[in-house]
Length: 225
Ligand SMILES: Nc1ncnc2c1ncn2[C@@H]1O[C@H](COP(=O)(O)OP(=O)(O)OP(=O)(O)O)[C@@H](O)[C@H]1O
Image (cartoon, rainbow, N blue to C red):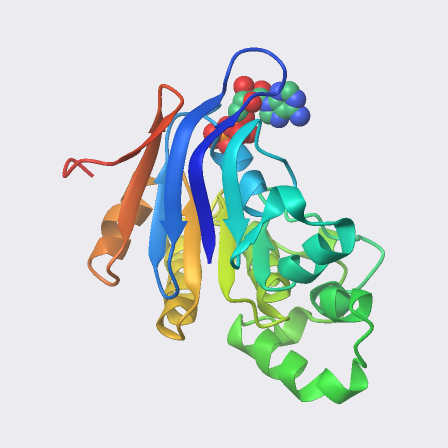
């Protein structure tokens, strides 16, 4: 689905990521960890085609990203749901309108999708908040809204950047169980997180590979996690 082969990335100085190879298979679950500044968000941006690799090959759904035009990248992105670290809502739109935004951007008729939208909002537990504005939500509610928006288009891959940042333990477990549910539906899930307790808890519930960025490289984390 997403494949990186000997990928390097630099923002202009030295290499931040070197010799990165990874294949995200359908139905896989990965955690990505590593110290602050190691390059986890950058790695997700390479997968989402927001950044182009400095060298190496990035293939998304079998296509070499370097050869794709803007429209082709936009099409491929519809199959990838992203939960951004800072959620990135439009604060003047309601929670429901924010969650529906990818449908609007894709030119889909919201009324025809109303039932799906209602079901999805109930699934993330935000039925009571759907007409509120994003600044009125708690941290956990924002993260759940961001997850709903990430999956509204029915993506094959979900990339989540610190989806449990700034929420308490119970809420992080709730978000995790939503991600596990999506994975059980066959979606490939990649979660970047500092939260080692989240990873430890998840390993009892889902077969997940834990990756770590260390010294610019991607490695499988050891059993110490
Ligand atoms: N647009 C940019 N231009 C230049 N440097 C950048 C840019 N974005 C990120 N960086 C730098 O790249 C490094 C990796 O950033 P990145 O956000 O990928 O790390 P991270 O592992 O996700 O960190 P955190 O866990 O703190 O979110 C950092 O040193 C950061 O300052």
